[in-house]
Length: 75
Figure 1: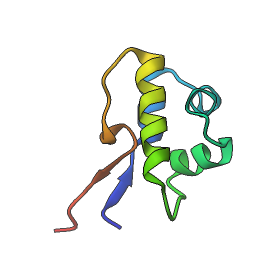
Figure 2 (figure 1 turned 120 degrees about the vertical axis):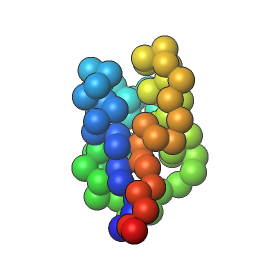
Figure 3 (figure 1 turned 30 degrees about the vertical axis):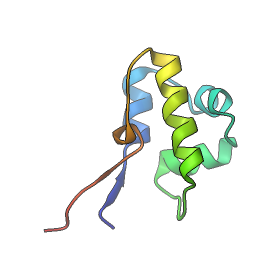
Figure 4 (figure 1 turned 30 degrees about the horizontal axis):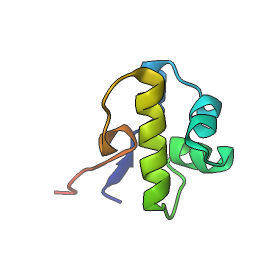
């Protein structure tokens, strides 16, 4: 799959816990853990938005979609 999940790297770089982000984003901890581990099969746009906004609030940074995932061309 050309989608690579980057949430684990983002949280480790920023020193954030999955629990803190899930609480701030108002997202189920299991949903965030699936994103963290790259085990999600589907993802709602509002969940992506909530997680990115939570990371931005907790860090004071301006992250975008790359905080959660990137597209890597298979070629």
